[in-house]
Each structure stands twice: as structure tokens, then as C-alpha cells.
Image (tube, one colour):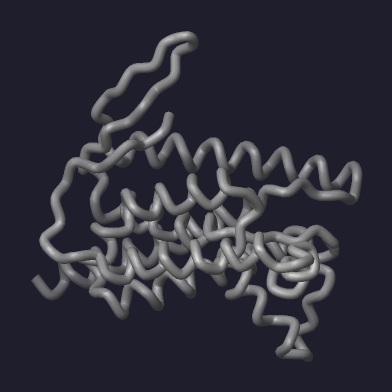
Amino acid sequence: MFPLYDIARTYKFPLVTYLIILFTTLVFLVEVSVPNPEVFIYKWALIPNKVDFSNYKTLYPFLTSIFLHGSFLHIFSNLWFLKIFGDNVEEDLGSFHYLLFYLFGGAFAAFTQYLLIPNSPVPFLGASGAIAAVLGYYFVRFPRHYVKTLIPFFPFFFTVNLPAYILLFYWFVTQFFNGTASLIYFANTQTSGGIAWWAHIGGFIFGYIYGSFKKKAQSTFN
């Protein structure tokens, strides 16, 4: 299932969401245009076995890795999800609050991935964890917003309006099963694949918990 757009309207221009999309795109263009992209990636991506909590210089990739991507498809799919779901979350949180939420969610997601495979030499990069935090928040705050969704049924494709909670629950379950499979693979081979499944899971949980606190606080004050 692939989301095309959410039907719920927003009444505030999602400035920060578009600035994040713009900045992430610019970083990617720099990444692919430097003489040696691999050196660039190894400098700014998160490499778990290089993390040393006694050396702050090894910790900045928990944030910088959010803005790197491995391919055009990688960045397109990530930013597409951010465009669809980010505007509602930004409107709900407020722009500055939303920016902090996005960054902390991305860092928490990267830390989740690190905790599970701290000895991995594979660089992890991408906005997926931060965007997963946005999805987790959206799941709590806007579960019944409808999302126009493309469903492939080869050789045919059709679209359907799905409640957000169904689409995002399906997304989370697929991440969980893939993440579990990746841990089994790592345990057997001591090598990890290129997709940080547990960053997705950690980010979603971060957003879910944050959204739940926001919902509880709002209901208390109301």
C-alpha cells in the first residue's frame, strides 16, 4: 500500500515541513555531487561501531544522518511520506515545536538502531526514523483521517480511501517483522543490511508516545 495524499485539510502553511524537504534535498544534491560520495557518507552517516560516548565528535551523526540518503528512490519515498503526513503534525504542534520533535524523533530512532546492533560497521542514513516519528504521532492524533491509498493487485492497481490508523498500523507491522528478521540475520552472520528497520520502529514509538502525552494533556486542560 502506498499513500497518495491525506484528505484532511490544514489551515496553516506547513513552512517547517517544506523547509525540511528543501534542506534534505539540498544535502542530497551535495552528497551525490562531491568527488567522493563514500567519504562524505562515512563522515556524516551513523556508523554504530564508531560511536564513543566519551567523544562528542562521534555523536553528531545521530542527527546529521537524518539528512543523508542512499538513492533518489530513498529520498523520494521518505520526503513523499513527510509531505503527506507532516503538515497535519506541524499544525497540531506548532512550527518550532514540530521542528524539535522531528529532530529528537530522528535522533531517538537512530539511537534505537544503534542499541540493537552497536558493533555494526554499516553506515545508516536517511530521514526514515524522523518521519516514522511523524507517522507515530499522526497515528495517535489523527487516526480517522482518510488517506487516498494506492493498492497494487498485479497486474492491476486501484485506489481506496483508508483510515490513517489502518494504513499506519499496516506500515508499523511490516517494519516490525522486517526488523525482527534483520536481527536474526545479524545474529547469524554478524552483518547487517542497509535498511535501519529498528530506527523506523523506534521513531514510530517515539511519535506514538509523544502524541499520547499531547492528547492526554489536551484532554486534561479541556
